Image 1: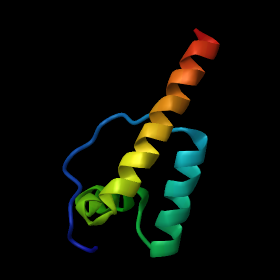
Image 2 (image 1 turned 90 degrees about the horizontal axis):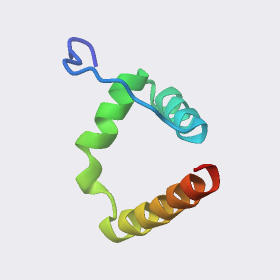
Image 3 (image 1 turned 90 degrees about the vertical axis):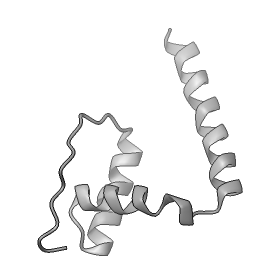
Length: 71
């Protein structure tokens, strides 16, 4: 995306699996990682809402279990 400026920057923490997937997605699409993240969020409404909601609940439960185990 020549000429497109990424104007927002923020510190991000990601799981190793999430980061590997982001890097693979960026590689597969020919995007830089920042552009890949922007694309995903700009097109989030194009995802299956029910499937995303289900995966989000699973991920939240996984985080809760991990917090209990470490805290």
